[in-house]
Image 1 (spheres, helix red, strand yellow):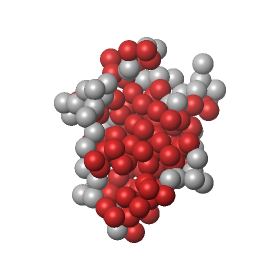
Image 2 (cartoon, one colour):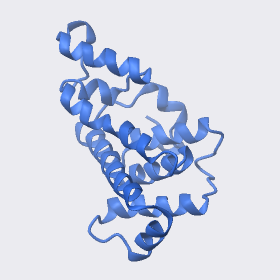
Image 3 (cartoon, one colour):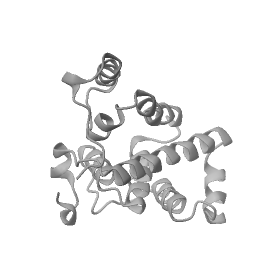
Image 4 (cartoon, rainbow, N blue to C red):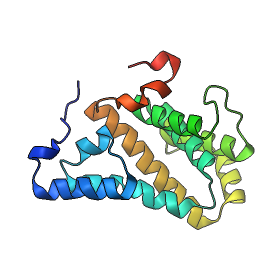
Length: 178
């Protein structure tokens, strides 16, 4: 059961409804995490910087690379909502997340995402060597910051026990039914 209820749009103060409406206008949908974060429009705005950093990573990282990276972080963090969100993205792109053939870049980003979560103080040197060979410093900064926000998203969902979004259910891993 969620520790923090989602906002009730009909009874929410005007500034929260305005933030809700702005999110719908910007991205076209409202997740349960966002409905929970909107108790604090400032917190919602900070977590929404995920989208800003995603845009900064384009075109250095394509959608699939981002999805693999975020899914790896989400899996290591144990966030069913976040994992399923990226399973859905992969499925909708035509991939099978249960039989995903990783390109070299995907393998690197999968390993980096997992390493970030497992021990952020000890990302293996060979991962850093490969990242530095592939990406310039700006991309690396954006990638680490982006991964940090992705991890924060997974942590928020886990700690607050955000309710699983019903529209994600068809995309959940077979052993992850809600």
